[in-house]
Image 1 (tube, helix red, strand yellow):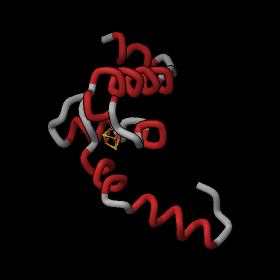
Image 2 (spheres, protein in one colour):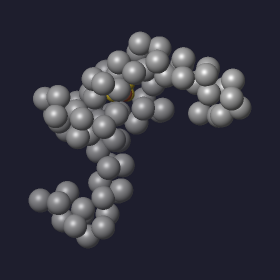
Image 3 (cartoon, helix red, strand yellow):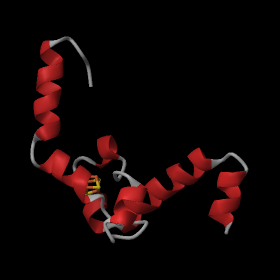
Length: 84
Ligand code: SF4
């Protein structure tokens, strides 16, 4: 209920930052993940939809980083002078 009250009162950003901090603290995979600073624990709705819970991993985002897609996109962006 507190989370819903905070969202209704316009503090959704605070709620999201709290959920990200909790996820990176309590979820062992996110806690030890080298991408956590960039990924910010993925999408909380995505994690819920995948059945991993509010503090679970977002498997789609894990795949994006772990498969090398992020680094490839970063490399391509760099060729166009775009910083990521
Ligand atoms: S890539 Fe996956 S394991 Fe790593 S921080 Fe993001 S959601 Fe967590």
